[in-house]
Length: 337
Image (cartoon, rainbow, N blue to C red):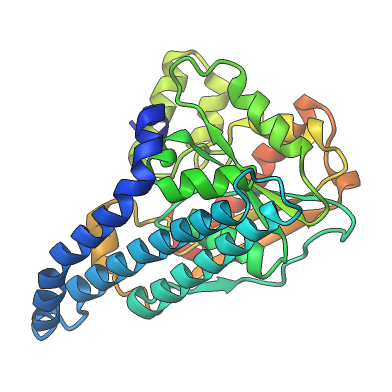
């Protein structure tokens, strides 16, 4: 089903969840305590200490999330109407600090480490940046948002599934940061692209819009289902394109075209990553923990705005070519295909 098939929380749930979540986090921590203790003893059997690592990391990430929610409450008390000059900047600082804490915990307890394959180029200092990224493996959204925020010095503006509003921290924090929540498939209509356009329109020179053109995390099963749907719809050209990609899904171009049409002044970064794309099931992720010796390897290529196509057909062909290049690079790193 994927995230797009999960319904948006109703208004009443969105009002209640912020108050329920800290209590739920405390309850989950209590339930996890005996699991952590059992995991510590089990590490004498499992030398990789996977149960201990995962349970400690899980509790740590829960409280990173709760801490960010508490910071949102503090900022609301400080500025009840959200009209102060530092309102958005204050929430951006909370977001970056939370990402940093999450990445520190992931590295300490799971060995998750981001490594660059070559130098990142961030475009012109006077232009906004748009990043089109591969979507595969556990934690890639968080890792790439962290990388762009802390290495590129750009504030990520994110396009994400509306189902993530079930996390009250994500709902409050990213809404106040002007991110865009993509509606579920049911009844979404043209609003899916309209929201992306609005987000692109509001980009500042020090922002980066992070978009995942594939629309969902790669997995072999999703690839097969997508090819079957294209074949049933008689889209033979798209079928041939999809079959040629072993590690990525064919990029959906409507959002890409909308962003570039709205912001022809933006530089564009193409983001590929390798190392975790083969981990597409809970069992595969579990078997790979800790990830020591398996870096989250990131490679980027940045185009000046003048180098990016400016009509729909050319943009579609261009992004397809870029995804083919990403797929070939991932194959060379991960040995797929």
